[in-house]
Amino acid sequence: MPWTGSRLFVARWSSSGLGGRHRVGQHYGISQPHWSQDGRLFYCHDETGYQQLYYVDFEDDNMDSPKPQLLRINGLEERELAGAEFLLSSNTYFHLDGNYMVVTYTEAGQSQLSVVDRFHGTYVDLNVALNDIAYDALQRINSREFLAIGAASNSATALYHICLPEVLGALEEGLRVSCRTARIAESFDTSGIPEGMLSTPVPFTFPRSTASQSPLSVGHAFVMRPTNADYTAPAADLPPCIVMAHGGPTKHFRPSINLEGQYFTSRGYMVVLLNHAGSTGYGKAYRDAMDGGWGVVDVQDAVDLAQALVREGMIDPRRVGITGPSAGGYLTLQAICTRSEVWAGAVSIFGISDMSGFAATTHHFESSYDYLLVQGRDSLERPTAQKDMQDEGDSGALRKLYESRSPITKARDNRVPVLLLQGTEDSVVTPEQATAYVRAANRVQGDSDRDRDDVELVMYEHEGHGFHLASTKMDSLERTEQWWRRTLA
Image 1: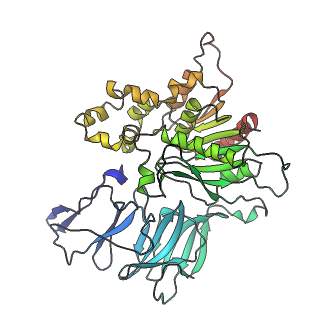
Image 2: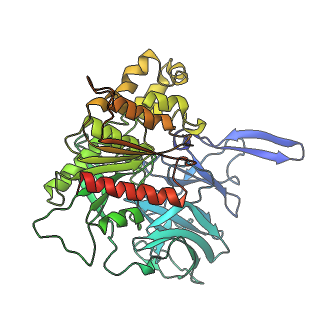
Image 3: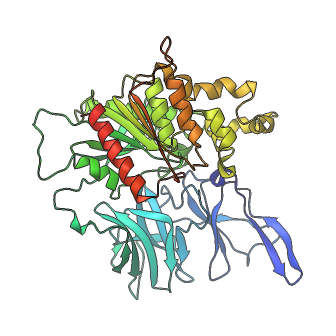
């Protein structure tokens, strides 16, 4: 994937074509190369343990052997200045002028806009109330103005025009610079939501049973408590809980407004957004902690989270559900098939059920992604690694491992009710993944002709990897609510 294997090259362009190509440094996993106004080449990399900025000064370095240098920004050493790139055009930083840069950094899963003085290595945060800024959402207008797309805990994703002061002065950590902000367009107007109906996501950490040493000894999540100004639960009642797992799996939840979560918190459920090991936003060690452990490490983190919430007296242990899309759907199926005692219900949204089948049929961009996550990055150094990868997990050497990570091998014995939602045109997680799980779950000894009533599959025509039609979104949400009423309420 780009964050593990991409390399950076420079070359000369002339009327005769491209020539003199040379690699920049020895880094793998480079992202976002950009030229500054003064001719320096910048990019992001995580060699320090966090995504940081590096640069090459071609006035000092020979073009034939460019030597990258770390741009040290005091106070941002343990912040993520970039993320895992699933798409081109990421742009978490840009140059205002020859001295100042605008940078989006992530700390503990939350975004923050800042201005960096790259010659003095200092920064200040901007007084902009956004905690979720997309990786491709910054655009320079001039040396004082720029555009940003972001969201907050009480406002949906919107396009903002931001204007900085004429004089920034000395930048010092801990200061916040006031700037003029104008909302140009928004995806959803939250002003119509009645007061007392929005649940604010709050950071929550929990002990991880698979790691005892910091920074991997704790897992991360955001808790959204039941919130409805018109209703109050009896004091002795603990709420049912829905654990949501993100896709990727190399992504993370942020604490911005989550409308699906709000739908359920306003109906009395606690919603918890899990950022398991393997998530971005918490540094390289946390992101890499799931390499080789996909379907094990993330599942255990989900269990550890649920158990921590029970210990804290926050949820009813008898009414805990789990859901998620894509890799989150895989986590959902694997969790109920391996730790069924924890969960009362589940909703898998185009989730993986057969790891070997996924490896053989997914799109080219992620064609080796599963190998790294299931087998581990170090295994690529084996002499047979390339052959094993070409066999896509179906070789004798990998078959048992892939079977152990495939929910379909355990679906028959699982008794946690599960709803599967799937698009018929999905080329990333194909429809066969959902139908295969249902077939496996219905193979009940002595009663193979009767379909189980605790396993339900809904196929949506003309939908791919992510639901886009309004009718599909409404139907899937209503079906999900009915499922949670049946299994949790």
